[in-house]
Image (cartoon, one colour):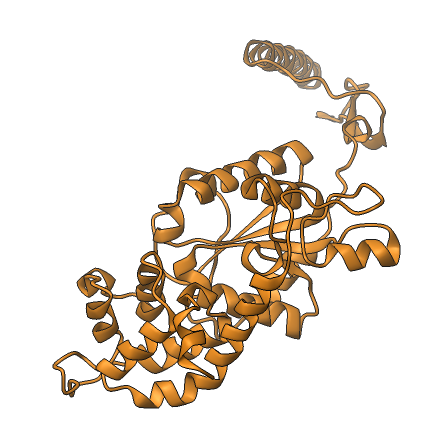
Length: 360
């Protein structure tokens, strides 16, 4: 492919497979530097992007973080290739070239597609995703999804792993902003909110420090939490692959941590079942089963012994179980204690009288 095409294609056009390959080849630390003196790994790329790589200590995928930072300066694929040459990584260029050509072609095709600010089909259905037109044509309804995948740009490699795993191995249909949202939508976040609210059963959130630093992500997370409360269902499924301080919205959620070694359970199956799990019907409050206790007073005393009959019948009642206040509960306990004392005193008097009769 001509160098002109690469010089007109930004690195933001790189798709998941390309970024995954770059990360796999550059994440490994190289000891021998390049002829230019730069490290022959992600640190060299960080120096070219003018990114302080000391901030990435302990990061599982530093290359992805460097690319996400560099992307803000809008470099091209041609500049990426020049950077790989400067750090003497011709092997990365050779392995990556075919994927880069495919990414550039896809980007060029996307520029040729005409879009409108508001896209609407003949039936009046608002088209939000690239799957909607065909789905509306076939069945008259827009596309519905198992889950919406929300993540930060720096976590794209792990997010694409989730996407490929769930769609390829578990045959699920996921929705992402970059892949599925149609061009020309007037308000991006409003479209995402509509998808989360009406079209997606769950919201998978890739939690990371960079994700939590984004006000837009924080807003969508808060919206999904409020939506789950309104719909009385489990909406958010948080996932992480590195340690981070959880926000208040997620502090009481169970987190699927892919950064830990899971030898005794399958996290991917756990994630898929978390998405598929249906809403459990609650037992109506009016049909609560409660025991009814009948206590009979002692009927007779024979040979110095007494008997008391207690029967417990569990019945189903439509009567609403009343809620007792703390003062009411204290009063009932006090009343029950007084009754027990009276019964005890009565039994003691009768036993004392019987003993006196037997002694005579």
